[in-house]
Length: 218
Image (cartoon, rainbow, N blue to C red):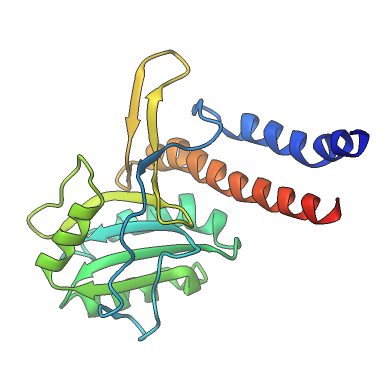
């Protein structure tokens, strides 16, 4: 009994405290699931360098940039500075963008520009026909829709079990709250809500790792 209490104090309590203080404006201790077990990206879709891209066992920021990747490059730079650069050292963290076929050169130019300020090893583009992208987006079961260029400025958090995570329930002020994605045109949305929610996801996995290590020592 004493050993379990010591383990709780040493390993569990600090993580709970971290979750509380890291959550900021978000009142959730764990981030709710919006859509459970979304499909993995199609293995037949071409990737930038022919690498296999999967959502399995990864914390993924998933996006649909549409046909005008370079025209919306500012969104990528904001996302890169506010989110990617802060969490890219986490080995299971990645960015995956599903883009229409024919945008490969735009994506390559974008990565070249971002590569001047960041290590881009965590970025992945896959390319598919617009109707296939639309069908895949439909599987996410979101309220938001893709535009007529098969894109959206919103990005989504997918956990290691391919659950799409966000906010639903009530805020700290008791008001109904629902958030399925994060607007890359809004630096404040990324800096406040998204940064906060990614912290919670990472803290969940750190807590699980601590638990596993503690159980092995008992």
